[in-house]
Image (cartoon, rainbow, N blue to C red; front, side, top):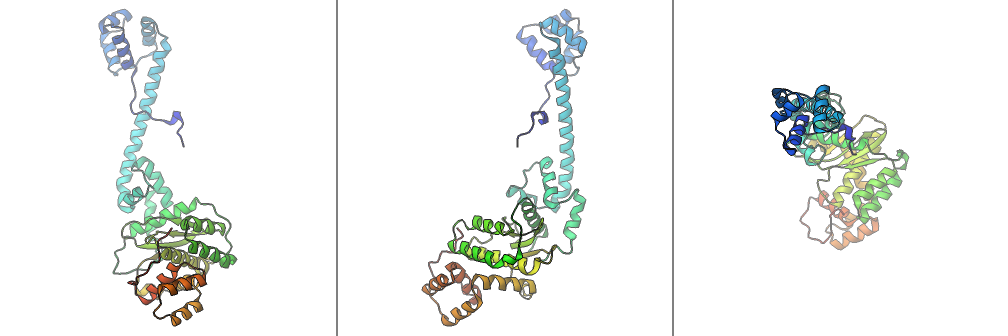
Length: 367
């Protein structure tokens, strides 16, 4: 959006004395001669030209008369100079205040990540209001409350993974902020089956999958935000409520159709199983396989939800029993029968059997 020209702040304020000097030079009039002509003391004239003294009404009259110019021109130049100087002083004061705040809050926000993904500009004056919106705070003293929320970090932990809580909270808050401005249809938890079928078709087709998935979810009242993750934040997904609608955040750590499909369905599991009757709940899912995660009731239920709706439970058991050493052809036939993408079948088999060195030509890329 373009700024109103009245709101623009000039880089420098031009004193009318500079214009007067240029005018005298152009007319080849010496300063001492002009002082004698106008009756202005030479020291005063010198101070005006150097910007140390302003042009008042009396001075504008004699200068205007001597140069055959409208005196109001010089008064207007003086008025504009004073206004511009005031704006610059105000701008500098605002920047100094912003720099002080910036140094105070930098240790508590992932500012380099925010700048990398375009959420911040690198200008503290503009970035500080943006950070307040992202973290939904009126002042930065409230940041401590953000980090101490008891219901916030519902994520699985692992000693094997170095987790940066500032990065995690920053990613989550950015996803929250982006979701807050999205408008989607009204959510109806009774339409789970219809939603799942439409998503499975999108996954199977795997063409503009992210955009089409977002459109399908939006039509059922669910927001989807795809946001890259910062360092030490091996997050896969995030499910939460956003202004009356459930929302899903996905980091897209692995750009594979099977990973994307499973993560979306996993977060849908949280929505339909755990968030429908819990308006304040949040689930943050990381790509770590710790024991406490595996035994978490909510995570196990969300995993089962994703697996069994992407591929029917009984159909999968039968397929595994009939194909203990399956081939690529077996995968393709089963995927076609289940109306799902072959990469989803292959990915599940590799995960459950912990076998990933299976040579095949199945394209798992997310398109």
